[in-house]
Image 1: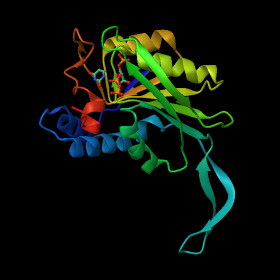
Image 2 (image 1 turned 90 degrees about the vertical axis):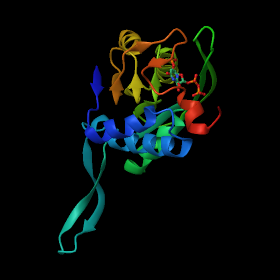
Image 3 (image 1 turned 90 degrees about the horizontal axis):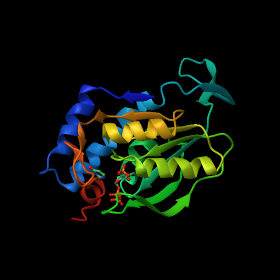
Length: 208
Ligand code: PRP
Ligand code: URA
């Protein structure tokens, strides 16, 4: 299933990110802010339960403190996925964070995994985080590794996706709900998303 997180504030910030003149600082800030705004959709159906702890309101009423029913793991795909973590953690401070190290071979566009570490938790909701869903190779490889670990409640949260990448993930994992801020037109011959926003990792970390 694919959900496009449509909101005028997301459109404004995405337009800043698409602008080639935008520098790393503003690019990172906009990415963080969009990640926070997207949480509204991505976690919309997550259930809450009453904890054993109570709170007392200023009007003197005692209420049970509410918490999320599922434990949440964020699994950013390095490097660019790191750029969305703070924005999500600001909304869900109790989320645990894993790391999946992966880069695309620039010639074959095949993903190469170099690091994998996830927190050990009972029945978590795992949200794979990466700004770019291009061919879908990196996301598919990350999701496969997470499933091998035995976690099966998985969502994919990206900023910009290409139709090819969405189709590839949907075919490989029909149970994984994909969330995007924008579904763009296509990939170019180098596997970059058009119109897209360029190389997300380079723009976040200023490596070009
Ligand atoms: C980018 C991006 C995704 C991947 C998407 O990472 O952050 O992980 O490409 O492409 P795909 O859908 O075709 O697999 P990149 O390989 O550039 O690594 P980086 O984040 O370290 O720059
Ligand atoms: N990775 C990026 O960073 N940008 C793209 O357009 C495609 C893959």
